[in-house]
Image (tube, rainbow over all chains, first blue to last red; front, side):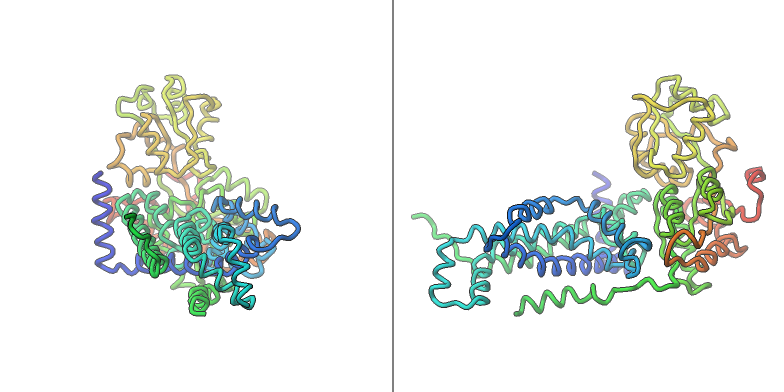
Length: 237
Length: 277
């Protein structure tokens, strides 16, 4: 237990003293995982919608693949990205290995199946009569999709939260393709591993607490967006 | 629309990060112990200041570090597995192996020492006593420099380490010490890591000072034929930097502040057979 207290004290010290290294690590975590989540939304939401609203050959197989991808171990994603980006790999000429961009790529691979899978489920639970109704009142195709998105807002935001939560907390891929380089690719999770390895458990706990705080702050904002304008259930009389 | 703008705004930083590794960036593959001890955080900026090559340090196990350099994925390597290093040099994948610094390994175990490992001066003999007593031994099992030395010592003792008494952690030194502590087992550790974990462990040093327990770090350059897009020149610059007199002087004093004694002894230019004399 003393370690937890030491960790809380160390976390407060690091935050209050605005330690520039910790600040940089925290910002990089937020930037990398924020960018990865944003980009996986651009891929994942249209893909999830397409899978929920249309049928095409290989539809079931793709659905199963997406659902499997939701449980893709980050370290496996990291290994594939590492193999592709290494100097003698197919994308070695891009010279992206051990950069934040490589971490974003790996995290997109982790996050987009989560976003796509949950989007797919969200749109499939919409009432099919809604589709007829919207088309009946003469909605254009973009209007139709936008109204469906609004209707599925609650589960869609849950998909964003799950995607972000999945990547901000992963360590295996970031370690492998980022290299945990000080001042360049060190994020909160890889720094926690490093400090544990050094035996600096108080700093490791502090970094863990900062990560939890960051995750909480982001989810607080998303939850607020999700829950505003929400119709409250009437009290049973 | 607002949401789309927000997404683009969030995604923008990733577009700016492209192609950060210039031709001149040096990738150093090294062992975790040089990073965990803080030595490279100390030396890295000195190298960059002197040579103006950006340096990327990838800290992994020595086995992986050597493999990365041999496959052309790193430009230079700082390792501590002499036998394995010499194998790569013999294959022509790594070149110009030069000694940099030394410290030592110790055998640690429970203070009541059921195997009487402290009764001998020879590391191989101590391992034999541990195996014979039925006590447990925790191995790194990860092809790190420490693991390589441990296997070398088992070979010397004439024992094939196998059985329920022999645990392989597959993890770093800190975690391995934790497991050995928890199980009341013996293990082989570098002194620096043991020192930084000491206050959380009940394990004590039972054997030290055997010449076989010297922990020799060398810097190795890479063969330009190992792969595309390597920075052989930059790698050589780092190797030269590690054995330069000014750097050796920094190594000599490193760690005094935190541990009250230096963590490494500089040995550049000394013959391998004379180290530790």
